[in-house]
Image (cartoon, rainbow, N blue to C red; front, side, top):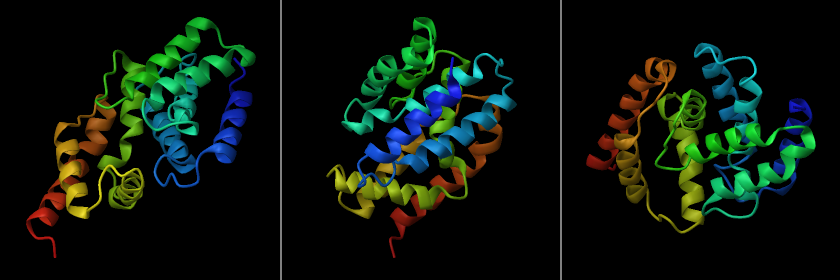
Length: 195
């Protein structure tokens, strides 16, 4: 596996080709998820040989946005299957990576530890202090796609999402659950008193 080469390849591709109107699913999001995944992998004691597979999955998990928003996870797997063999990834490694990418599809459905880690890393911000800053980027993007059009719709959507969402890893539960609950309470208070 030529991890460093594939990392450079996909980051360059995303930087050049991701639609500029993506305010949330941007290169910044990929880098944020990458940092969270590294942290979780260390804390959750991921085996050394599994770490590059996890991080490769992170790098490709939203690459489907290069061409489309709907089913971008499946498209991301197609992109990974197309490019990873050139970097000496085996078919088994690529399928493991695609399993992780597909696990991030909402609602998240992880089947193993690596899939749990990428899911928790992808939504790490839900339980952080920068929740509203990052959330505003997603709000703008969803408005651009015509999925929502008002702040009230957005806040109601966030309440439904946060109430259904759960972290999977012990680390994310310990480090993010309390702040996520506080963020949810803040959104609920905005709905009650929108002023």
